[in-house]
Length: 230
Image 1 (spheres, rainbow, N blue to C red):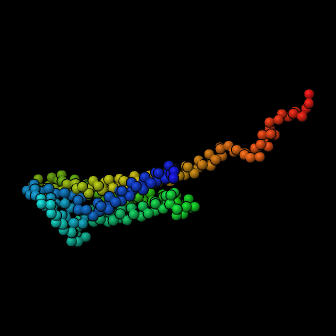
Image 2 (image 1 turned 180 degrees about the horizontal axis):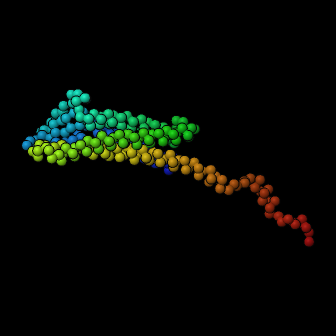
């Protein structure tokens, strides 16, 4: 089956957004937002996430401890939890809505206006989901940089650094935003294709076939004075 240009762009946006949504869900729960290397004890590596703090021993064992109270957390961690939950939920909603707007989807096949609105709505939701992923990751990264270069803290005190989850969170937010923009652009391409199709149909010359064509040819093949005998 040959897919149109807007369908290919739509599918590409859905695949990018889906990958970003899965990455965002992973970032939400892994305790790898920050790393802490102790110079005094190199056998231990501390990692921190939104839900717990873990210690990895040199033998490969890991021990984690969850935060005791949500209200006792710093403001950035509390807001990050809420935004990441909203991002994951809106990403799933955007995937379902934008999938229903595909041309290859048989649901509401005759309602082209409704499918266009679903596609546009799904793209916007994906974009919002990406922004809600980028905000907490960038906020925690900004606080980590400020704490790392804080001159009031003695140099002997260990400092937190960026973890792997932060970089994955930036990629997830980027993919969600780009995928949402592609889905929105697919609706614009669909609108231009629908407007150019009638013009192409009007420009296409009509061909007369069968007995009517023969009659039309016979009437115009004889000259006007063919009945005059010289």
